[in-house]
Length: 165
Image (cartoon, rainbow, N blue to C red; front, side, top):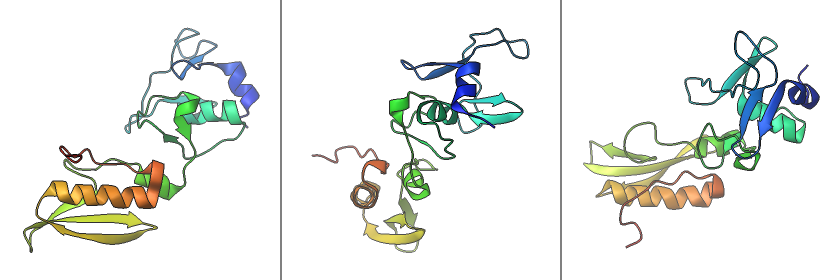
C-alpha cells in the first residue's frame, strides 16, 4: 500500500517548481531524473509499484498523508504541482473549473432557431438557461456572473474583451 513514507523514500519533491524526481534509477533512467511523462489530458504521470499515478496525487499524499483521487490546479496549469497550487474540490467544483470544450466561450452556444446566442450553466447536474443574447460577448458575461454566484473561486470565467468598459 502506498504511504507518505514510501513516497519520501522513492521520490524527491522540489517545492519551488512542484517537480518530482526519482531517487533511484528505473528502467534505464538515471536517478534524480525529473518526471516529465504526461497523459493525454496533460497531467504529469509516473508508474510506481505497477500502478500509474498522477504526480499531483503523490505530492498531495506526501504533504497531507491521504490519497485523493480528484485534485484541482488553482492556476489551471496541469503540470504545476506546487502544493500551494493544489486543492481538493468536489466533482461539481472541478467541473466548474474546466475550460470550454470548443472554441469560443464556456456556457455559450448559438441558437439556430432564434438566431441569438444562448447562455447556460450546469449546477448540481441541472442545466440552467440564462437567456438569449444578441452577441456572444453578452452571453459570456452573463455566464461569468452566474458562474461566480454558483461556484465562487472554482468558477472558470470567460475572457471577454471590453467586458469592463
